[in-house]
Image (cartoon, rainbow, N blue to C red; front, side, top):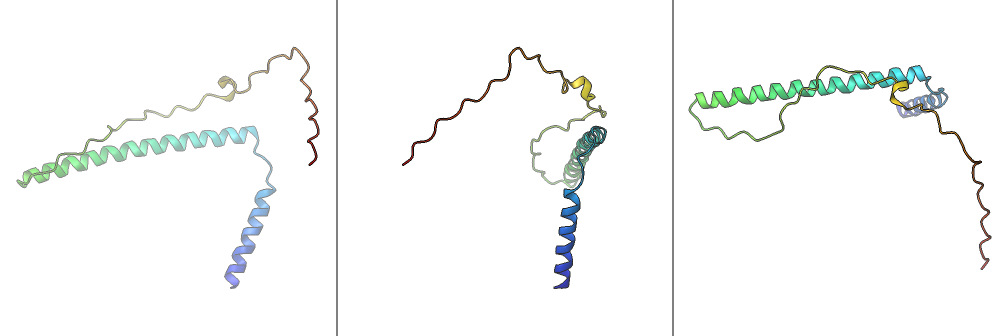
Length: 121
């Protein structure tokens, strides 16, 4: 029972502390985006290496089965392993056009028209 109360209290304190955090600065957001891009690329490289090793293990298995004089099942056709290449960081925000200046206004913004009152029943 006390463990449950401690866990609930910890969850409440954590939620309250998380809710009071200020939004990240643009520099921190850019660093986080770069870290995410690096992590995504690392995951792609790891998947490529795994694919290559699986192909090597399958080829070794087929060779050992053939050497033992047994009939091996034909390999299942799968997608070829694709090398993701070297890491290329995303372009800076200034070059991506995300902060392009807005077009100059040629007329004032339109004002919403009042809605007619709904008929009473």
